[in-house]
Image (cartoon, rainbow, N blue to C red; front, side, top):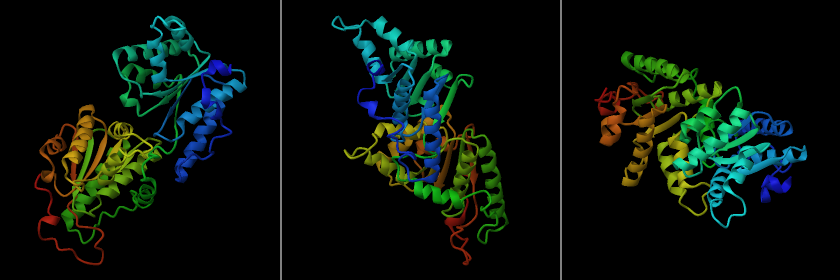
Length: 390
């Protein structure tokens, strides 16, 4: 059975060699990882239905998948482990006259495996042929309810719609997110984000502002109310404008807190840091590729972009931001954006999308900086006026 499993060097990745709390220093991520590991081991002992593992690159999904294969073998369950890109390569190679196995033999072996473990779903080239073969395998196993473990590389949104439908069937599929729903293990954001989340909640948001006049206080109340409505069922884009320190980031983090409380995923990115991390992925020492990180950001089920407009306005930075925003705009993916400064100061291509009332709820905050406590701010001048676009 060891030879049949196709594990090779991954035979060393067992539940016994697994780091119990994962690789993150974040306590919440560690708790989620322990829960995922326990569920994976229980599945391996008695494999039934489909188990789908999601999470960021480096979170430990492949170790869990290999651990399931090894545990299945221990309990006498034949299991076949293979990454999706390798599977498609082998199927293509089977057409060669020199192939030791025919295409039909290999295809039957995979689609009827007693337990099939597919790693790196979503990392393959998305050609029509590849999507057709994958769907044929999964549709067959879906109809026969054959035990299947699938490791998703990236997010569901990047997969073919037919595959998504199979992977989201609640009658057959159990989905486990490895790590915290908001964690991205290759970003150095966890500590900062967690500190913000602890203190930036609905309860700590002060609608009185800092010497805010009545219109300013009303804008804070309206922004809080709108943020709560959005967090309950994110749809479209929620865009907050106002001067630095007026409460935009506080509301954005409170939205993430609420989604976490509901067990949903969200990704937070401070825009200047995001661009720095994208640049760093080109380094040979980077643990994640540019494509992996870029895809994770642009396809996140809920993305929070904080401080848009604070980044260096280089052509490269503008291009990357534009690509992320255009993709999410066209796919109508839920997005929260806080803007430093004024919408009219942003590039025209970005500004036009932020002004689209069919998708965007624009929420201006007309209150001054909270951080100048104990000192009445100067309300004169451009800094404390609402954006001219509002």
